[in-house]
Amino acid sequence: MPTHQRSLHILHWNARSIKNKEQEFKQFIHDMQNKPDIICIQESWLKPTKKFTFHGYSVHRLDGSQTRGEGLITIISNTLQYEQITDNITYKQHQHYRIHRGNNTNPIDIINIHNKLLSAHLRKYLHDIGNSLQQQTLIVGDFNIDLTNTQHHSQSSNTLYDFMNNFNLAKIGDSQGTRLNEQTGNYTPIDYCLASSKIATKCTWHPLQNAMSSDHLPCMVHVKIGTQIQHTESVPKFQFHKADWQTFTTECQNINTHNIAHSDIDIFNQNLTDAIIAIANTCIPKSRISGDRKQPVSWWTT
Image (cartoon, rainbow, N blue to C red; front, side, top):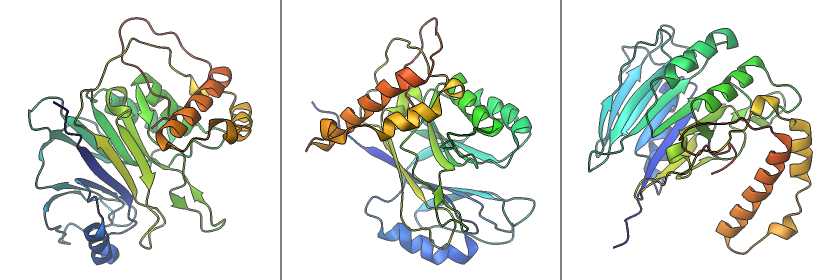
């Protein structure tokens, strides 16, 4: 008997104040064909006295000490069973919820995050979060770190790479821009979805092209949760901080799309992924892993 393939839909967005966009945002969600089961908002800018409700959903807020630039909201469909996860992490700029499936096995943890820390404090903060991760976890939100700058990686980007490597996380989707640079008119990718390796191959991610007067695009994550996720033998992990990014970028730009093109989008996607991973194998060193671990997924893989 075939397994019913159901997806969990998650929208994450730095709203840069939800107060003046509330009705537009609610209409935007209402008009979506696949409405999100979970909505993660950063920079809500709400005062504790400001009421905010969402029909059909439960609203959970973490208001900042200052209105501007702070505040998180996690909005969860009333059709889901879930619980809030508490931790002892001192610096609180995230919300953590555990979504229970119908058979009460293999729950999925959702972490809504807005990073504003410098590298010195970021490493400890991410390490503390990493120690709380479950086998199936998604971390979504505004990381304020651009991983695409191949000429110069900041300490913060190296810290994020180390976090992904140390806790077996994959960045889902490509590196499409999500935040508008008003000076250049270009979008910079700083909003991400990180997934634990057990669930990463079941996830897709993409930004939506309606910022609703924010400087960030909302992003959608789809998680296929209807099938059993397979385990694989351990494999070496890419050491991103030692990568030759200049050569990697050049080689990716030189990929002959005529050789990998196919009318079947799934085959084309696999061909392109194989080509990129082949380049990565020559430009990015790998570490050795001992013991039984789950297979890590490269950060450009969907």
